[in-house]
Image (cartoon, rainbow, N blue to C red; front, side, top):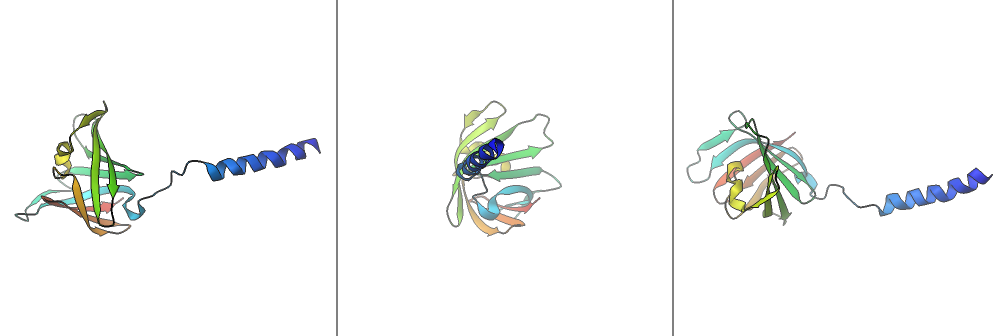
Amino acid sequence: MFLFSLALPLAFVSMLCTITACDKLDENGDFDGNWQMTEWRDNATQAVLATKYTHRIYYAVKLNILQMREYGKPYDTWHLAYFHCSDDSLYIDKVFHRPFDIEEPVDSLAIYGCAPEGRYAFVKLTKDDMILRNSLYTLTFRKY
């Protein structure tokens, strides 16, 4: 009987902690997740600058952080950026270079197809595909 009387309050406290815990669920809809760049196209010339076969560029999105990374480099570095979104745009706020957490300007993301102003328009965004356009480039992604 004593164990049962302890179990009920413990179950209540456990349930209360679960309900009030920090909400770390996806908050960016279809934008959340891991994206592989499949094409990088110059807006002015329509020339294809990179594909998934020539550059292994990935964006990973969670909460308000965007990780940009190119695999296959001889060193293990990447960039992390704080961002915010509107209905049709993505804005880069603050950029850090890993692994040493050095703050860098937005134009350091040029190696991933980011324009110096750090703004992208969502041309297409579904659970499987994304097209981002900025002042210089159009970037096509697939979710994996």
